[in-house]
Length: 67
Image 1 (tube, rainbow, N blue to C red):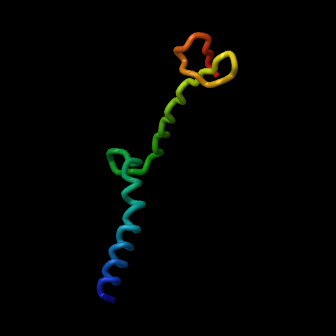
Image 2 (tube, rainbow, N blue to C red; image 1 turned 120 degrees about the horizontal axis):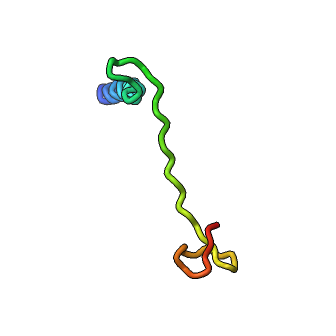
Image 3 (cartoon, rainbow, N blue to C red; image 1 turned 30 degrees about the vertical axis):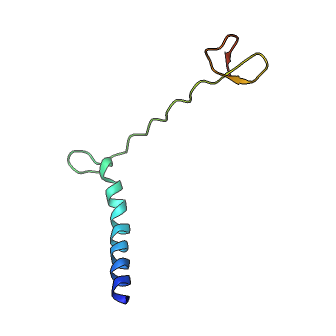
């Protein structure tokens, strides 16, 4: 039992140590030098519309205006 726990602990430590190096991969140029990572594009929020009473409705309904 101790042997299995020891193997599990060692393998977890190896994976935890390797994670930062795997994450740094995309931030290197062709020659292997570290470069600034490009900023991730944030997805645009969908337009929400309100009716004349102030309730949220689908934007295709008559009288709906973007909120």
